[in-house]
Length: 184
View 1: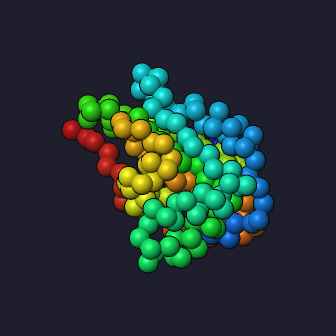
View 2: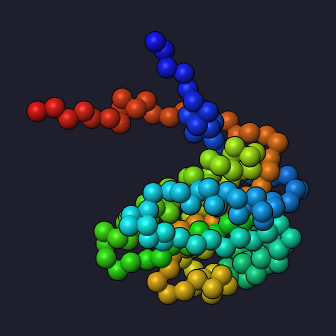
């Protein structure tokens, strides 16, 4: 009997990072809350839930981009303004850090699962997302702008927006090349 792909498998295979081509359309805060609520069922060791999120709604992105651009050297302002002006909204993922390596890694794994859940749920609603880990996530001025506390790490900026042209899929390495089956 042949196995057919589920809707979930289809969404996983079809989801793409939307890096540009965002439409001039508001990303509603209520939708973001709904997606975050569903995504929060990601695995989390000991139910630590080591995450929090900062949403920059569409109506605030212009001012946010101007504030963010000021954290870069002057010679980069125009380039960064153009780059950050593309998304309709932003969601910044922040993780509680733990000085213990095992717990830090578990926390990073948990928020990564959360972000993947969010991306899949957003795709299902035709909301484009790309997870960015550019240098600003380490910049003290950006941490200050976003009120990121000591003991927290910016895991990434999620660029959000609706789109009308789906990015083309990129070829994946066959799993046979990435799988080893243990045998004694």
